[in-house]
Length: 144
Image (cartoon, rainbow, N blue to C red; front, side, top):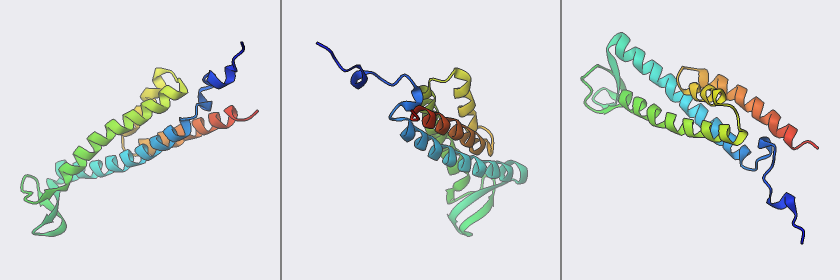
């Protein structure tokens, strides 16, 4: 009794894994959102610690206003940016881990991907580099 090995075996090339394109798309979206939130966080930190202001929304001053630190009475947008980036960085780490584990890369590549959410603009640079590497690997895996 013979069985068809190709139907039950997983691909030997990680780039041929069927979930890699979806994982790459999720990673790219997470990288862009994390990068944008990190840029907003950088502006917020400069405003708060450099000039002593926080961003208040829906307060007496209107839709958006710079308010002296500690005097925010309405929605504290500065704090919301901080919290959103922190939580979304966890999502970004998950997306990075998913791509890394599918590709079966060494640990340093995961650390490379993960560092994208730590420094302004770096998520855009790393996302671009990782996408090129992964797309090239996918193309090579599907080329006979």
